[in-house]
Image (cartoon, rainbow, N blue to C red; front, side, top):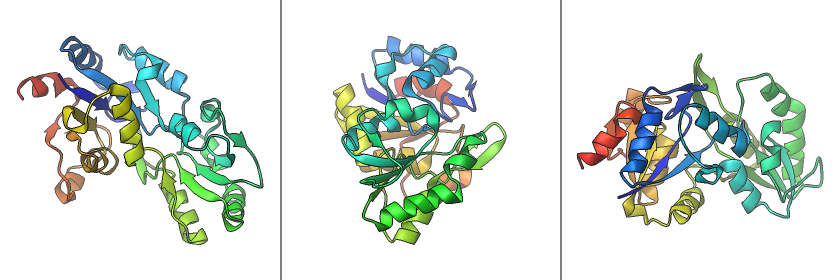
Length: 257
């Protein structure tokens, strides 16, 4: 039996539309005795809301099995004064952080949403405010640094562009709290109580999922859904251990090995 880390966006669903066969696949993996943990860079829903959405696909999981970047941020930045440019939906998950508008110890950038709220969060005024705090000595953190993500209407720009802009302007480097950071994978393995070589990472993003997990010693499976692009796989310097059409193929693929 193995530990299995499962990405959510692009693996279980795209823009809330479940991937065909995903729920049945998860049930089969549990029946086979594999230990599962759902790991996501999603920064637009609270953990409870995201878990509810996954359950609506017919996937059985407890809230505690879902690891999100806002939860990781709450742990990493506990007790600090933080200027947070994040979607309002995740604020409740930032427990233990003092959210401020100025005099911050840290600046935290979340991810973009498909809705109009992204325009408010990443406005010029807010980014300029964040830059001023960095100039005054605040540290820069981000929930992830994704360039784009896949939606039902195509690829959309993600918050990595804003993170990179602040890095350039302030001549500093952001600490990434979500995938592909080693700390994120370490927390997932600790929760599973599995060693890296006993664990598979299943994702649709070559950089965040495959490269990040492989660097931490995990075995990797890339699905041809969500963000998957054939050219990205061909150009990748780190190749996955396996490539499957979708999450629906995972139980049989693992059994064959």
